[in-house]
Length: 448
Image 1 (cartoon, rainbow, N blue to C red):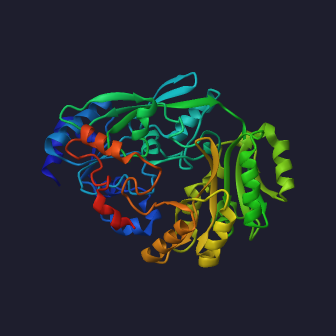
Image 2: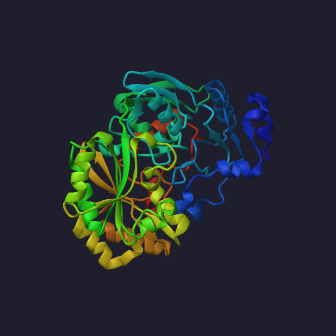
Image 3: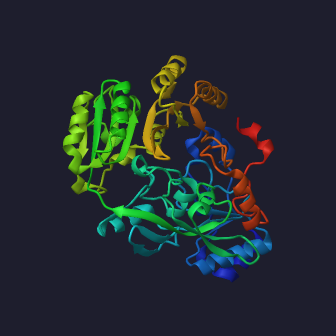
């Protein structure tokens, strides 16, 4: 055990420090194993200890101690991210922020919370008061506000409200990692550089998120004979503003064959569309389903929304998770197809790779424009083969956000890396915060 751990106990008390090997190992990992590449690179990385500060003052004391002793700090929420962003590369302290979990204030159109609050608890609380979040990830029952803001991008609700950068984070309060840590609040455009930055430029301790009056959401799974039918239906429905939607997710067979809890409801060899739509739009939805020759295979009424089984449990990267658990050697990519060429692009990929690549789309809005974001499931053979597939996607005009690197920025999302690097130097002058996640120019060849 490091000598400084005993010293840290004197600073904040033994009850907030975790040193048991199994617990530290668990808190040093996220869902990096979605990627076989990241698994090999990160499986042996572990912190020296973990700290669960119960107050902002305790967190500040830990940060001050770490700066004095030059100990690396890795902030973490629930660890449901997929890129190794919560894994310490150089030992040190994992900052588990899940004890900073208070709802500070619910106001008209917004909610002010601490960053360790679980999104599932926040959504549940809001809906009791007749309100709801704009967007949240499929892992929302476990994910924290800070983890989503610093490691996520979009999710359920993005078909209506876009991703995190589209006005879905109103304010963040940040603590710096300096000899005398500063705490400040950012609003407006300044928030952008603290979204999906892996917590490299400061520790997000509070956030203000937009909320709206709750909608009674019905959930449906619609089956189609072909994936092209499913995509055509989804695209038209996604553009139809008369039907209020929170989720439009499309998976081609055989991805649904891995959805164990839904197997008895889903017909063999059919592609599916998973939906959350306003219960009041039932007639309009039925019209769309009939028009495109779909068949409703499974439904959950609005009265049972978020009670037990949820359709969203099989969307976004939960679809990858089910394939990974019940398939063989399954991983994924993050892609964005050209909306004017999507069927031609899919055909080229299928002709080249067959069902080694299996298609999965999530319809979202980006800058107000409906876009089929894609999370194709890949049968993994080797790193070389994976990058051959990536190169083929890109050669055919499909943009890839690479989920098989822990380097910030190489995963896409058009991050303002120049601004983030500058903030890193200002807010973390000793490079202690999530060290190694911001790439240097020479790293590019390592991830391609």
